[in-house]
Every structure is written in structure tokens, then in C-alpha cells.
Length: 335
Ligand code: NAD
Ligand code: LMR
Image (cartoon, rainbow, N blue to C red; front, side, top):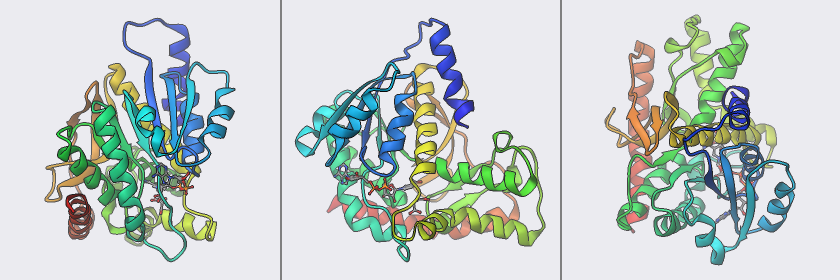
């Protein structure tokens, strides 16, 4: 996907002049972390990123100094500590948020709520003040709740645009593509699996019936693959044995997501990326589906499409959990 989405842009930006905007300020909040550092590296080599603003409560001078030596056009600036937050986000076109604590073995994503809810609330408040037009991509868990928190905070500030706030679920698609390709002996770059719903356990709904190319599995294998995709985050948390959760694959997925936002902002046509957004395609107020992206964020929600009977059951199991997670976020923000 990196070669599909990032490198072609690199080539075209060097070789052609265009009247379309191709210079954007991207801010990363949580830039010194396990995800933040490799994500910032991938953004530094994206030619659409001409200003890369790195915010964290620790270590950003070092991360920024290091990245600033890379021979690409983007200017890197580090902003350390809350007193520099507004400057870091000011007039950003895109803000990506991987700030907050990750899981340790035995924890659920919801166990992160108490720490991460306040972090996302404060970052969203700052974005409302100095970057009200930014497209905001939230990686911080629990995504099912942190996205509603950010949306409520933006509403309270009178700056909410549902087309501009996204929960980043791209890693679920990246994983599904990889696991299905492995299972069928295909090249992952040729495989595309829609994954809808939310970003935790049963709320992650892979639509293997809609795979490209079309694939089929016996029922037991289909169920095992679905569970593996739903529990892939936990697989990494266990393997890291206390040292955190997915960082490198998330950085890749976050860079893919940010690049899609930028391609949309630039005016490229047919840019499609899934994300967890305000939605009316199910009973859940927030839901991840493939989105057509454009100059104002979401151009069109591409909806659910046709689900198999098995996927209908998965959807039914996801909705109560999503509603509970969303309520927790909304209640927190209204407190
Ligand atoms: P990490 O601990 O390595 O890094 C987090 C960074 O956030 C640290 O540098 C920390 O200083 C910073 N931070 C803490 N409070 C902050 C604040 N108020 N403002 C700015 N920065 C702040 O964690 P990580 O492994 O990078 O994971 C970050 C988050 O991403 C976790 O919540 C994790 O669960 C989540 N995550 C989500 C997905 C997804 O698919 N959406 C995938 C992987 C991880
Ligand atoms: C993931 O899916 O890898 C992330 O949500 C991190 C986690 O806690 O599993």
C-alpha cells in the first residue's frame, strides 16, 4: 500500500507542475511516541507535507532535529509541552493524534479510557481554537469513544464539521488484506477487504464476502480469520509482552490514512479510505465504512453495501457495544 499510495505521489510531485494545491501543514500530536515517531518519519517523506509540526509533552526537540536532516521538502518543527500546543496546531490542514497510553497484556482498549479521554479532549479543544478547518484523524484508543469525545468538544466550541473528524481504522484493513493474502497465497498489494464498524473486538467487522479478488473459505476458516482480524491488536500486545501495542504497522496505516486525506484535499478524484465517523448507515451514531474523500474531508459515505448472513450477525453483535462506547465518550465530554 505504501508503494501504491506514497511513492507514486513522490514521483508525480517531482516531475509535473500542477495548479492543484500540493503543500500542506500536517501536525502530529503524540509525535514522540511508539507510533508518533515512525508516523512522523513516513510523513516527512511524503512530498505533499511541506510543514510537519511535531507536538508532544516530551522529547519533540530531539525527534524534530533528527527528522529535519532528511533530504525532503517538508520543514519540521518540534513543539514541546502544553504551552506550545496552540502554535503546533495553528492552521494545520491535517492533525493526526496518536497521543496517549497503549495497552499492556490483559487490558482492553476501554481500560485506556480514563487516561486517554482527557488527552483527546484537550487536543480537540486546541484544534477548535487554532485549526477549525483541519481534518482530524484520531488514532488514540479507545477509538470508539475518543472520536465522539472530540466531536462533542468541537460542538461545544461551535466548530464541529462531521466531514472533518475521523477515527483511524485503516490498520484493520491493512491486517485483513495481509491475512487474507497469506491465506490464499496472493500478493497483499492485490487484495482489498472492506472492514467496517468500530475499532475493538466484536465491533471490527471484516467483509470477506466482498473481497477483491473474490475469495471463499470453509465456515470454520472464515470464522477463524474473522476472529484473528478482530483480535489482531491483542496478538501484538501479547507478543510485545508489556512493551506496548502495535506501533510500526499503525504508523504505516496512519501514513496511508493521512496520505489519503491529503490526496483528497489536493483534489484528486476517487480517493477512498475507511474511517470511523459520524454516520447514519446503521443504528450506531458513529460507524466506520469506506469514504470518498475530497477537498472538504468526506465527500460521500459509501455505506455498508451488501452483507452475507454471517456478516449481518457480526453487525448485530457490534451495534450494542458501539452504542455503549459512544455513550461513554459523549457522557465524558458533557461532564
Ligand atoms: P506511546 O506511549 O509509545 O506514545 C504515546 C505518546 O503520547 C508519548 O510520546 C506521550 O508522551 C504522548 N502523550 C501523552 N500525553 C500527551 C498529551 N497530553 N499531548 C500530547 N502527547 C501526549 O503509545 P503508542 O504505542 O504510540 O500508542 C498511542 C495510542 O495509539 C494508544 O492509545 C494506542 O492504544 C493507540 N493505537 C491505536 C491504533 C488504531 O488502530 N487506532 C493502533 C495502535 C495503537
Ligand atoms: C491495535 O489494533 O493494534 C490497536 O488498537 C492497539 C491495541 O491496543 O490493540
